[in-house]
Image 1 (cartoon, rainbow, N blue to C red):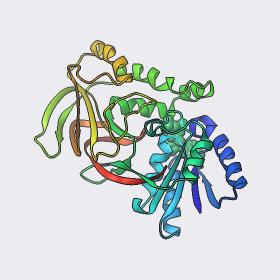
Image 2 (image 1 turned 30 degrees about the vertical axis):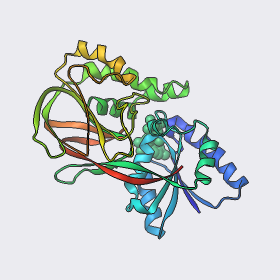
Image 3 (image 1 turned 90 degrees about the vertical axis):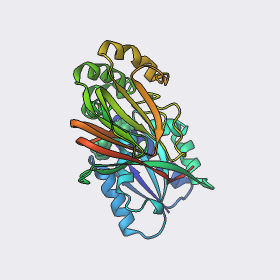
Length: 307
Ligand SMILES: Nc1ncnc2c1ncn2[C@@H]1O[C@H](COP(=O)(O)OP(=O)(O)OP(=O)(O)O)[C@@H](O)[C@H]1O
């Protein structure tokens, strides 16, 4: 038995078309399945909670949607050890699918899931605040500041719908990235890796912790990221002027930003950040609020993928 959670609205309605294709194939092959379509933001989490509370043992759960839907669903799974997860990308940015090298063809992805002989293990990130107001996991990346501002605007931007319709959805992030670079002020704060001493940074643009190589619709933020090494790939940018940042942005898009003055990249198991004022955070493109103190931890090989 397979459980499917589908966001019909992902990529401005592409989700439902992909689901119809997949459903037809499941019926043709006489595969037993239960399908649930999300009806509102946050529903993916509720559906996953419900499926796992109503059914015992290991469950095969297939997600159809974008990175945001995957994030909602994994945050609803109470016991990740009980989940064998299949993924069919149907979003606008699809950074998880891109990083995992998944096909663009939904039926090929379905076939891979149904014929999966062994599980593919993958790291998962956890973000917590000291008061535990935030205690959420992510599979692609989390970021404080600039990249989160871009994600927050993208979530509600009419521009994204328009560009999705003309199959240029990825452009949304590039346009908003340019806009937000000028619109948002820098941050100030302290960063510590793996329990080491905190160091102060001024003019912080972003602090990003990556499990996968790509975020923001194909920006190669962490070219060295390995989703099985038990480590986060960190990138933070500080102390640079906005005109200088404009010149670095194209290098960031293609993953050639390491080595620039003011661009710090390294790997660690845990990253702690204390900012002077609360700043927007994203987890896989979803923005749960503004926070000034967070700890990001890598949970090694916690996710079991049907591949
Ligand atoms: N039925 C629904 N109606 C409106 N919004 C929904 C619905 N179901 C889920 N959502 C919300 O849609 C948002 C985006 O979904 P999703 O990530 O699947 O697509 P996307 O944004 O096109 O893709 P990506 O995240 O890869 O860019 C999520 O924040 C989710 O909460």
